[in-house]
Image: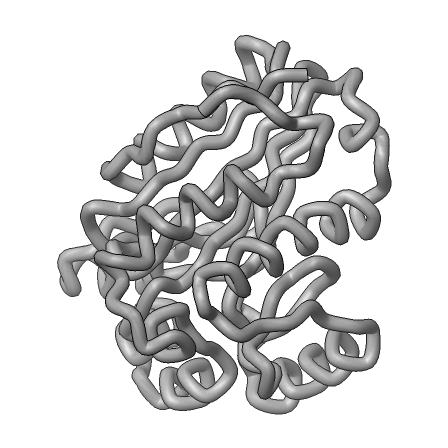
Length: 243
Protein backbone atom coordinates (compact mmCIF):
# COMPACT_ATOMS: atom_id res chain seq x y z
CA UNK A 1 0.00 0.00 0.00
CA UNK A 2 1.37 3.42 -0.97
CA UNK A 3 1.07 6.36 1.39
CA UNK A 4 0.35 9.71 -0.20
CA UNK A 5 2.60 12.47 1.20
CA UNK A 6 1.09 15.87 1.74
CA UNK A 7 3.44 18.89 2.02
CA UNK A 8 4.05 20.87 5.18
CA UNK A 9 1.32 23.47 5.46
CA UNK A 10 1.75 26.63 7.50
CA UNK A 11 -1.68 27.92 8.43
CA UNK A 12 -4.26 28.43 11.13
CA UNK A 13 -5.77 25.87 13.48
CA UNK A 14 -9.30 26.41 12.06
CA UNK A 15 -7.96 25.76 8.55
CA UNK A 16 -6.26 22.58 9.74
CA UNK A 17 -9.43 21.33 11.41
CA UNK A 18 -11.36 22.04 8.22
CA UNK A 19 -8.78 20.13 6.16
CA UNK A 20 -9.01 17.12 8.50
CA UNK A 21 -12.80 17.18 8.30
CA UNK A 22 -12.77 17.37 4.51
CA UNK A 23 -10.41 14.40 4.16
CA UNK A 24 -12.50 12.26 6.53
CA UNK A 25 -15.79 13.27 4.92
CA UNK A 26 -14.49 12.62 1.40
CA UNK A 27 -13.13 9.25 2.47
CA UNK A 28 -9.60 7.98 3.08
CA UNK A 29 -8.80 5.59 0.23
CA UNK A 30 -5.02 5.47 0.75
CA UNK A 31 -2.91 6.34 3.81
CA UNK A 32 -1.97 10.01 4.02
CA UNK A 33 0.06 12.16 6.38
CA UNK A 34 -0.71 15.83 6.94
CA UNK A 35 2.13 17.92 8.42
CA UNK A 36 0.93 21.27 9.76
CA UNK A 37 2.65 24.15 11.56
CA UNK A 38 0.45 26.90 12.97
CA UNK A 39 1.10 30.44 11.76
CA UNK A 40 -0.58 32.05 14.76
CA UNK A 41 -1.46 31.26 18.35
CA UNK A 42 -4.91 29.93 19.18
CA UNK A 43 -6.57 28.40 22.21
CA UNK A 44 -8.02 25.02 21.31
CA UNK A 45 -10.48 23.51 23.76
CA UNK A 46 -11.02 19.76 23.91
CA UNK A 47 -13.94 18.08 22.20
CA UNK A 48 -15.84 17.91 25.51
CA UNK A 49 -15.06 21.52 26.51
CA UNK A 50 -17.24 24.40 25.39
CA UNK A 51 -15.62 27.87 25.78
CA UNK A 52 -17.61 29.99 28.20
CA UNK A 53 -18.08 33.74 27.96
CA UNK A 54 -15.16 34.53 30.27
CA UNK A 55 -12.74 32.30 28.40
CA UNK A 56 -13.85 33.74 25.09
CA UNK A 57 -13.40 37.32 26.28
CA UNK A 58 -9.97 36.64 27.82
CA UNK A 59 -8.79 34.84 24.69
CA UNK A 60 -9.92 37.63 22.37
CA UNK A 61 -8.36 40.25 24.67
CA UNK A 62 -5.06 38.36 24.43
CA UNK A 63 -5.38 38.35 20.64
CA UNK A 64 -5.96 34.60 20.35
CA UNK A 65 -8.91 32.99 18.58
CA UNK A 66 -10.58 30.26 20.64
CA UNK A 67 -12.32 27.18 19.32
CA UNK A 68 -13.24 23.61 20.15
CA UNK A 69 -11.64 20.73 18.27
CA UNK A 70 -13.06 17.37 17.30
CA UNK A 71 -10.58 15.24 19.26
CA UNK A 72 -8.73 15.32 22.57
CA UNK A 73 -9.97 16.00 26.05
CA UNK A 74 -8.22 19.17 27.22
CA UNK A 75 -7.22 22.69 26.27
CA UNK A 76 -4.12 23.40 24.15
CA UNK A 77 -2.33 26.59 23.18
CA UNK A 78 -1.42 25.94 19.56
CA UNK A 79 1.05 28.13 17.70
CA UNK A 80 4.30 28.18 15.71
CA UNK A 81 5.98 26.23 18.53
CA UNK A 82 3.95 23.12 17.64
CA UNK A 83 4.17 20.60 14.80
CA UNK A 84 0.88 18.84 14.18
CA UNK A 85 1.00 15.50 12.37
CA UNK A 86 -2.20 13.74 11.31
CA UNK A 87 -2.04 10.21 9.93
CA UNK A 88 -5.13 9.22 7.91
CA UNK A 89 -5.83 5.49 7.63
CA UNK A 90 -8.45 3.77 5.45
CA UNK A 91 -11.06 1.81 7.37
CA UNK A 92 -10.07 -1.43 5.62
CA UNK A 93 -6.41 -1.15 6.67
CA UNK A 94 -5.38 -3.58 9.47
CA UNK A 95 -4.18 -0.71 11.67
CA UNK A 96 -7.65 0.88 11.59
CA UNK A 97 -9.13 -2.24 13.16
CA UNK A 98 -6.95 -2.01 16.27
CA UNK A 99 -8.27 -0.79 19.61
CA UNK A 100 -7.15 2.57 20.99
CA UNK A 101 -4.21 1.17 22.97
CA UNK A 102 -2.96 -0.88 20.04
CA UNK A 103 -3.28 1.90 17.47
CA UNK A 104 -1.58 4.44 19.73
CA UNK A 105 1.21 1.93 20.45
CA UNK A 106 1.67 1.62 16.69
CA UNK A 107 2.03 5.39 16.39
CA UNK A 108 4.24 5.55 19.49
CA UNK A 109 6.88 3.39 17.80
CA UNK A 110 6.93 5.68 14.77
CA UNK A 111 7.36 8.77 16.95
CA UNK A 112 10.12 7.26 19.10
CA UNK A 113 12.09 6.21 16.00
CA UNK A 114 11.56 9.67 14.51
CA UNK A 115 12.66 11.64 17.57
CA UNK A 116 15.66 9.48 18.43
CA UNK A 117 16.94 9.67 14.86
CA UNK A 118 16.83 13.48 15.15
CA UNK A 119 18.83 13.52 18.38
CA UNK A 120 15.86 14.07 20.68
CA UNK A 121 16.04 11.74 23.72
CA UNK A 122 12.63 10.36 24.59
CA UNK A 123 10.67 7.28 25.65
CA UNK A 124 7.14 5.92 25.73
CA UNK A 125 4.90 5.72 28.78
CA UNK A 126 3.66 2.77 30.81
CA UNK A 127 0.52 2.32 32.86
CA UNK A 128 2.22 3.40 36.09
CA UNK A 129 3.31 6.68 34.52
CA UNK A 130 -0.16 7.24 33.10
CA UNK A 131 -1.83 6.60 36.45
CA UNK A 132 0.63 8.84 38.30
CA UNK A 133 0.14 11.68 35.81
CA UNK A 134 -3.60 11.62 36.36
CA UNK A 135 -3.09 11.83 40.13
CA UNK A 136 -0.76 14.82 39.71
CA UNK A 137 -3.21 16.48 37.31
CA UNK A 138 -6.01 16.03 39.82
CA UNK A 139 -3.92 17.24 42.78
CA UNK A 140 -2.79 20.36 40.92
CA UNK A 141 -6.26 21.06 39.47
CA UNK A 142 -4.96 20.75 35.91
CA UNK A 143 -7.47 18.33 34.42
CA UNK A 144 -8.59 21.06 32.03
CA UNK A 145 -5.22 21.01 30.20
CA UNK A 146 -4.46 18.44 27.50
CA UNK A 147 -0.73 18.42 28.29
CA UNK A 148 -1.20 18.02 32.05
CA UNK A 149 -1.49 14.22 31.98
CA UNK A 150 -0.38 11.23 29.94
CA UNK A 151 -2.17 8.58 27.92
CA UNK A 152 -1.30 5.44 25.98
CA UNK A 153 1.14 5.96 23.12
CA UNK A 154 2.28 9.41 24.15
CA UNK A 155 5.95 10.36 24.23
CA UNK A 156 7.90 11.92 27.09
CA UNK A 157 11.44 13.07 27.82
CA UNK A 158 13.73 10.69 29.66
CA UNK A 159 12.71 12.34 32.94
CA UNK A 160 9.01 11.92 32.18
CA UNK A 161 7.91 15.33 30.85
CA UNK A 162 5.36 15.25 28.05
CA UNK A 163 6.65 15.83 24.53
CA UNK A 164 4.04 14.43 22.10
CA UNK A 165 0.31 14.32 22.74
CA UNK A 166 -2.09 12.08 20.80
CA UNK A 167 -5.76 12.01 19.85
CA UNK A 168 -7.87 10.10 17.36
CA UNK A 169 -10.95 10.70 15.22
CA UNK A 170 -12.86 7.69 13.92
CA UNK A 171 -15.38 8.21 11.14
CA UNK A 172 -17.24 5.92 8.79
CA UNK A 173 -14.87 6.72 5.91
CA UNK A 174 -11.55 6.83 7.72
CA UNK A 175 -9.46 7.16 10.87
CA UNK A 176 -7.31 10.16 11.79
CA UNK A 177 -4.51 9.88 14.35
CA UNK A 178 -3.55 13.38 15.48
CA UNK A 179 -0.21 14.19 17.15
CA UNK A 180 1.11 17.41 18.61
CA UNK A 181 4.87 17.89 19.18
CA UNK A 182 6.22 20.96 20.96
CA UNK A 183 9.19 22.21 18.93
CA UNK A 184 9.90 24.82 21.60
CA UNK A 185 7.98 25.89 24.74
CA UNK A 186 4.61 27.57 24.46
CA UNK A 187 3.38 30.31 26.81
CA UNK A 188 1.83 28.15 29.51
CA UNK A 189 1.01 31.23 31.61
CA UNK A 190 -1.09 32.61 28.76
CA UNK A 191 -3.01 29.34 28.43
CA UNK A 192 -3.67 29.26 32.17
CA UNK A 193 -4.77 32.90 32.18
CA UNK A 194 -7.28 32.34 29.41
CA UNK A 195 -8.76 29.04 30.53
CA UNK A 196 -8.86 29.45 34.33
CA UNK A 197 -8.57 33.22 34.70
CA UNK A 198 -5.03 33.49 36.08
CA UNK A 199 -1.44 32.59 35.16
CA UNK A 200 -0.65 30.70 38.36
CA UNK A 201 -0.99 27.21 36.88
CA UNK A 202 1.36 28.01 34.02
CA UNK A 203 4.43 27.14 36.10
CA UNK A 204 3.00 23.69 36.87
CA UNK A 205 2.31 23.03 33.20
CA UNK A 206 5.81 24.17 32.28
CA UNK A 207 7.28 21.69 34.76
CA UNK A 208 5.22 18.82 33.32
CA UNK A 209 6.22 19.41 29.70
CA UNK A 210 9.28 19.46 27.49
CA UNK A 211 10.10 20.34 23.87
CA UNK A 212 12.32 19.19 21.02
CA UNK A 213 14.63 22.23 21.07
CA UNK A 214 15.37 22.00 24.79
CA UNK A 215 16.05 18.26 24.63
CA UNK A 216 18.24 18.31 21.53
CA UNK A 217 19.90 21.72 21.63
CA UNK A 218 18.97 22.07 17.95
CA UNK A 219 16.95 25.01 16.66
CA UNK A 220 13.36 24.38 15.63
CA UNK A 221 14.14 25.75 12.16
CA UNK A 222 16.72 23.00 11.63
CA UNK A 223 14.68 20.30 13.36
CA UNK A 224 11.42 20.82 11.46
CA UNK A 225 12.44 19.43 8.04
CA UNK A 226 14.52 16.71 9.68
CA UNK A 227 11.55 15.60 11.78
CA UNK A 228 9.25 15.42 8.77
CA UNK A 229 11.71 13.33 6.76
CA UNK A 230 12.44 11.09 9.75
CA UNK A 231 8.72 10.54 10.39
CA UNK A 232 8.18 9.48 6.78
CA UNK A 233 11.19 7.17 6.96
CA UNK A 234 9.94 5.64 10.22
CA UNK A 235 6.60 4.58 8.78
CA UNK A 236 6.28 0.77 8.78
CA UNK A 237 6.68 -1.43 5.71
CA UNK A 238 2.99 -1.58 4.83
CA UNK A 239 3.05 2.18 4.42
CA UNK A 240 6.07 2.31 2.14
CA UNK A 241 5.82 4.57 -0.87
CA UNK A 242 7.70 6.97 -3.05
CA UNK A 243 8.47 10.32 -1.46
